[in-house]
Amino acid sequence: MWTKVKRLFVIKTRWEAYLIIYALALGAMTRGVDYTLQYPGWPGYLLMAATGGAVMLGGAKILDAIRYEREAKAAAESDGPSAPDT
Image (cartoon, rainbow, N blue to C red; front, side, top):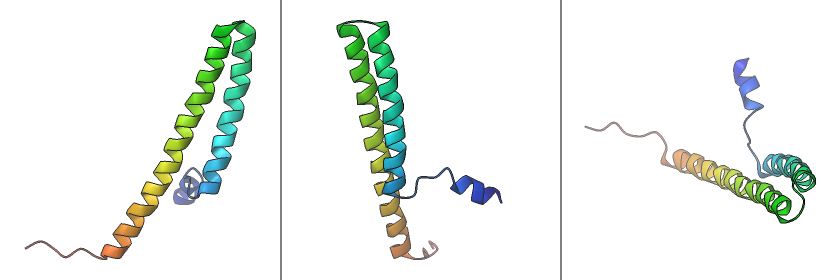
């Protein structure tokens, strides 16, 4: 049962990654708007840009991780069972 619950928190497809990145971006931009209200002028806009940039970097890392996991899984399946070393 815990295996099924743990699978809910694993990003398996690019579509799921895009949904998560969208949610992160929505929250980051909301926080960025708050920064522009709290810090008027260029400091607020700089902090807003930083929140957006953080989501872009995180999103790229999420998408890369999905690709690397898929490639590692394909490589492991193509190798088949490993022979014991003698």
